[in-house]
Image (tube, rainbow, N blue to C red; front, side, top):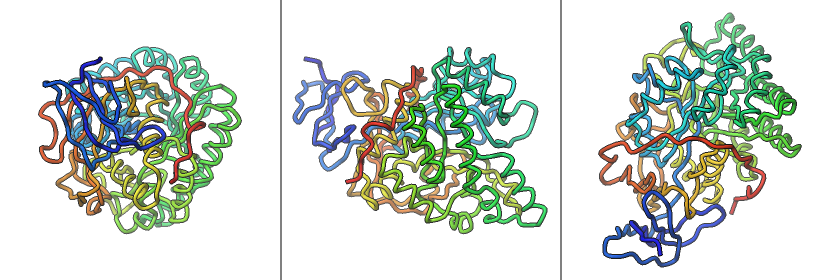
Length: 468
């Protein structure tokens, strides 16, 4: 019988399709036993978890930590500390906003060096698809890129070596290359011609407020871009992942494509599920993002889509910046990005499970299992024998209010400051090591390490029902 280094005893455990009262046995870094009653020896550490629920550590496949070069925005240490405190035990960092962006091997090496020894939880990296870097895709895949990211609208930024929008030729040819590499292409899908024209017209007319910005990036811009990308995906056979989808119509297009046999997945973010366009006016710059926050009616449809299994992944799209970049009388000039990664799990437990009765196994799948499978992070994503012991203990009896001082971000700004949650995170484990405790805080030293991605797995077709 396998010796157990640790037993988490007496908790309700969220599995792929059920919640059961189980003991969790950990040997080394792995889950080695799941049983109603586990017995260790005199050296086994016992963690009493009666009354707690254990969730799989979340896998956030959409964060911007801005290293190398822009750690003053958010670095690996502060960003990963935020994730650890929020119950996220694996993340995948996006290729833009670093200097240089991760679009060629030398930039990849710089990012690996910047992250080494600095992350509290495990991590992987996206590569980028931009005009002129097709020859770099295969080397980046060989170095371990979990997939590639491209923008169908202008990503913004200044300088010579910035992340650039992929034109149609770049997209189409890049998809052929990425399909051969058996990787996923993640897409920011907004139609550039539409949003550029509407934005320019609004600014020229002196309409530069929060709601003017929202109206300059309508749902139709997302729908048109998704439709075009799906056509390219069907033509090339490239696996696609649409990031931060904000509209039900786009989700329906993706679901229909999946039924036709396309290897495609959808992602939305907590801010689209918990904030609306009215919050952009109320909160201002901390709630600016692209695509923008939508109406209450659109949000309600997103929740319906989640319950129906039409959303494959929930990720934060954590996009921080210095406070000075959130200050302008012209809302179009303000940096567009929401800092929210530390709150993802708590928001979904509060507004998904407690308020809307979304089942915990479904939340576990969209927050952990399906993102891990999508990018081939084979050891991650669920509480099962042989998987990494990435675990989050939830205390339903202890409510908590998020204060700015609780945030581990470099810049303590978030639209969720002031929210009260009915539960709290008691402890977080990454590969069997406790990285956060509500009593003692973060672990003394970062233990996270790079996780090499393998072939992705299509997700979201089987086992999607989950409202109870």
